[in-house]
Length: 193
Image (cartoon, rainbow, N blue to C red):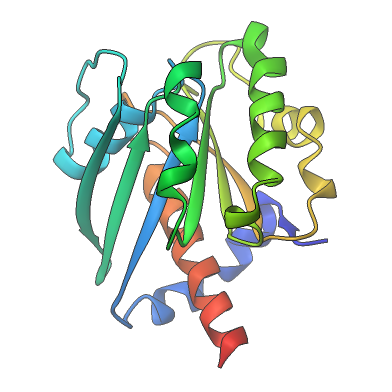
C-alpha cells in the first residue's frame, strides 16, 4: 500500500526538512471539479492572500519559490468543457494536487468519477498525488477519514498518495500539502538513482 495517512507523514517531518535543503524545480497540476477552490488555493500560495475568483475558463499558471524549490503550478478550470483539454498539460507533470470542495457532499460522486478517470490516464500513471479536501473551515466539511473511505484511497497502489485538509481562506494545510509533494518528489528521485 502506497497511501500515507496523516500520522505517517507526521513521522517524516524532521527528515523532510533536511531534504528540503536541496534545490529542485518541478511542475504540479491542480485539478478537480469547478468550484473546488483550485484557483483560490493557487493565489493563496502565490500571493499569500485569499482572492475571490471567478470560474476558470482555461488555466492559470504561477511559479512560486517554496523551501528552496521552484514549483510551477498549473491550475486548470474544472468545468466539463475545459476538462477535455486537461490532457494537453499532463506532459512533464511531476505531481497532481487533486482538489475537492470538502463541504460539498452532493458533489462527491462527480469528484470520485473524475478522480477515477484521472487515475486511468496513461500520462499520469505513477505520479504522486496529494488529495486536497479544501474548505475545511466550513462546518461539516469532510474529515480525512471520510475522504479516505469515500474515495477508497487506501486501495491506490501505483502512486504515492496522501490526503490533506486545506482552507484557501485561512491557508491552513496548504504548506503541509506542498511539503508532502516535495517529500514524494524526492523519494521518487532517490528511487531512480
